[in-house]
Amino acid sequence: RMGKILGSGCIGQVYAGTVTHGDGMEQEVAVKVMHPGVKNNIDADLDLLAFFANIAEHAPFGIGKQLVWLDLPGVVQEFHTLLIHQLDFRTEAENLERFNYNFRHDDEVLFPELIDGFPAKAEILVESFCDGIPFWQWNRENMKNVEVRNNMCNIGVRTVCQMIFKDNFIHQDLHPGNIFCSRDGKKFILLDTGMASEYDDDDHDRIISILTAFIRMDGEKAGELLIKDSNARTRDEDKVLHEQEYIAKIKQLTDECKYNEDQYLMQRLGEYIGRMFDAAQKHHVLMNPAFVSCSLAVKVVEGVALALNPDCEIWRIANPIILASEIARNTKKLGNTFGVSSIAAKIRGEAELMVKRVKYLGIDAGKHNPKREE
Image (tube, one colour):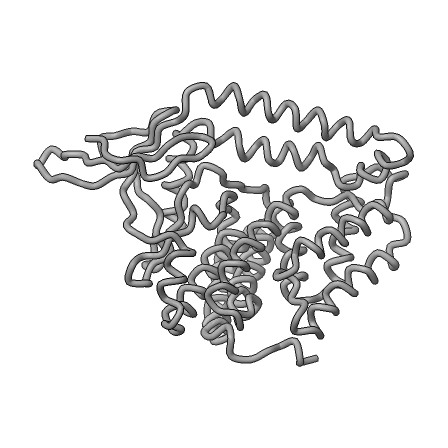
């Protein structure tokens, strides 16, 4: 049975519904139905974006030559790849299964689940109904409950960090409309998983190494990694110009955040990405679209985290996850190199023990301020 409309977006509408199982039991569900003709409209819009991105790189007066380093066609292609998957709800169903598997041991994170007997179709998806409150509404209603809000903040940051650094499977439509909280404040609910990204091992390693350097306020390392990434994707005659000057500019960004409490990097990410783009144009650093995409995902969760806990310091929550990710990747590389699974297993065991020892770093993200520490 179909009920009232729960929400509507550019791709489709979501209805409340009820299904009756073979044993006579009824279950509340959400039914997603795609808008008629939406595929043709989005294909046309994406073609226009690609056209203008290519035109921009040929703009006169030297403007086009500078825009080349922002890789606008690459950004459009990244967006195209993500958005095109939303036009088939069977892809979203596959994403839901994978997100539920990745977070199967986490009782504080909730995704909708598929309903037995109702397989996904290209234009219709039936999933479990997640009872919750939109994030902004929940936050307003719980303004005085600091402990619950701080806990929800930690869950949200931990969830996105796990996606980026550990799972390499990232929800790429993380706007507040897709983030809900359970009424009791114990579950972080994520909806609309049609847009998700995954990278090959080399790209993932490169992206999270750069993000990790920024989160840890190590501008020098971040600059070096951005240069290395750019040089690997360009011809010899297009290598980075004046590398040390570029590194100094990136270091200046992180130093401003590190030693100024009012200029936290992710809190002013839009401004800082603008300055990074400006430096990229001047020094011929080809920006990585996947890095920009992941940075925006971090920005969204940063906004959510700071709304819940203004004293939140993401690095304290992210650090144990980043450490575990680094050890796991190094273990995998070692195992691949020597082909010795027992060595990999032993290192993995040591890694788990080490992560447990440092996990206290993420227990209370607002306890002290590392910006005053050297």
